[in-house]
Length: 402
Image (cartoon, rainbow, N blue to C red; front, side, top):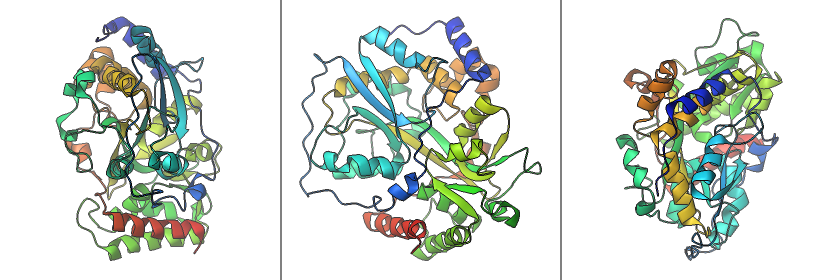
């Protein structure tokens, strides 16, 4: 049964609170070694060649649900509760345990791959992971097929996301949020700002630069600066050329840390003054600690990506997860979440809902990018299994110092 949509005045108050709040809304992961922990995990093979069987669904009798997600990726109240999650529980009777469990795709996969291969419960009934990792899980048979009858709001999915090459027809996944990878800097320490990835290699920043442990974002930005179309049929040599730039900056000490979501700790404590980052995060830390950081898409382009809901093969509460996904595809709910996280919503009608609440946010290019903004970013193309292994190994070799 569809829930009653919240009244505009309530949503307006929540959004205004989200924009004005200076209280920490983040449960940052303290996995400073997240990149190192992920080194050998990018191309790990499953335990066996037999595809696991989906668990029997017990949603009719078990009104609970566990959702694993990234840090700072949902609306959060001052007391640490999640208003939209709480309303979902009130409306459906399904109790949700929300876990901030994902620091980067590879480290999360490393924790759960053995259970997935055996068809076992991984401790999450739905998890939000990035396009390429979702493609891997689908290919290996580690996700359950979604029942569209339980997700009528799938009709609100924006048309450009309906048929990705990793999940044609969206049988196994639906987008949660999208965003850009670009560069940011501490405006107090670097008042002249940055324009390009190569600005990060300025000797004055030696040892104060951070980059992402997500290969497609860090190497993707470097390749774009080298004139490579990362969405096209680039060559192994072009990828390797990007890795070699990365290697030089790590080995010289220019790059201080290579991290997942925990890179934000380094920005806030000023261990790093500039970094390759994810777009919405910078808006959030500015709200928490003052307007100290600036995000920009580099002159030569940024990357674009989506994180997607999937139901792991061992979940026994798939129907509950589908009801949750359906709830977050209501435009008013999607707009409320977007107001907090400042990432790109995949829900048609969310912009109109936002315009009725806060016209300024409805024009925010990090949430509702126009064609001009989208023309400045590229999607890192899908890789074959062989390419994923080869490129992942090259990237990890830099982190291992080999």
